[in-house]
Length: 544
Image (cartoon, rainbow, N blue to C red; front, top):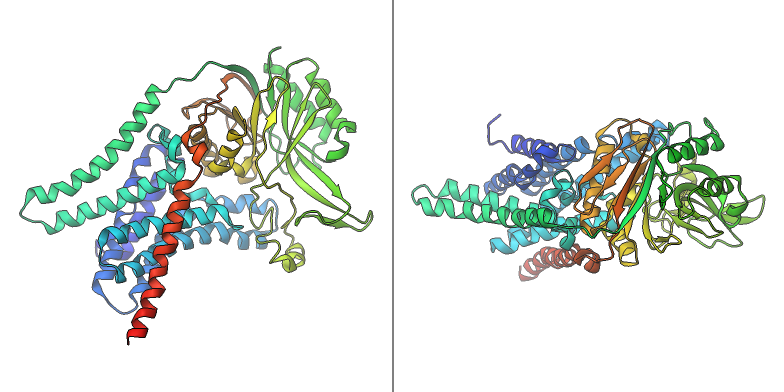
């Protein structure tokens, strides 16, 4: 195989991107050149102008993205198999393995098609960036959403270089990575072509280096110059380390509550204001309307009696009942002839009768929610027959904010929701002064999935300039400050409780104000530019 073989170059890009991806934090800068071998491979294919060039472009790019995606998120099968039998889990796993790779490949294929009809190189590259970010945004907003591999997430392991996410969010990082790769590719081509003039060889390299140095320099200046306002609140996070396969049935709810309260008491102070327990810490399927009469609620309040200013934010599996099919996800109960929703919820309890609920809303497609539920509702019996739990959970349309008696606002974020900066930003805009992520990463086993999930939380801290407090049942719990620094964390598969004084923040970042405007604008640009492709085909046919 030749050194410049498109196949070898595609494999090299896949390797570089995998090496650069969290949790390989030491190699994050490789993201800025990881696509260069692929761009060289595609350029070689396009310039040859052989038959079936489009197919070769698609397959070459597809090889890179399929290998890179699968190598980074191989652990997805573990998570899905926790809810489904092996056959269903394997089929559903193809969604994150293949669908994300397909969207990435499609972005490069559209770039190839656009390049054929537009001779202006800069416009063609603008199209590539627009197509790429547009596909990322699509993969974060449609019913098959799985934005785990959004390019900007890659700097979660080296967050010192991503401090300007407070203005742009992760999509700003995606643009930086894509443009850097384009400039590096152009510098490579120019260096190969200009054999005599040294200045012409070096000029594109200098432009590329400048494009790297300026954002990195700004970020480092922000990182070392950032000062938090001291507005302390004492918070306790608990990691009960209960095997997720034993939570429902293997260990009683009361025994789990005893473990949680004992761990909380072991580190709490009289002035502790928040206790954070993990996702589904109370696995009781409690009726939300009657929650105050349940043993679990009364035990939780009894625990809080020792901490007069304390509030408890805990995961709970809850239900709501309706007289009619009030929601798309509602199921019919033949015995009572009413409808109900199951929720993966966060609940806040305090030393009063006030109870607050938030329902997990970013649900895993094919596992927790049927994609396009109105359109595909006829397939629900098929999935149920295969052993899946599709459409098993209800959700709410907007993020929530819990308020303590003292007025402190917290954004409850359940598991997978921590991938959506815009969603969390909306909660911050509505008054959240810190972020509480509750999760149960034990389904994935001791894989890189739990590490990636923990590291991504650092980006949410930077985007919002809010502390992130993370409670994982069997994952990694910890505290992340407003710069994205991990100040304290637990070990994997270890029962633990951690406490810390965190600082509240009321200031609103540019990103929180504007949301994912970069992705939205580039998506619109991508749609407009993509329309030139069929228009050009139609125009040529008409001219002929």
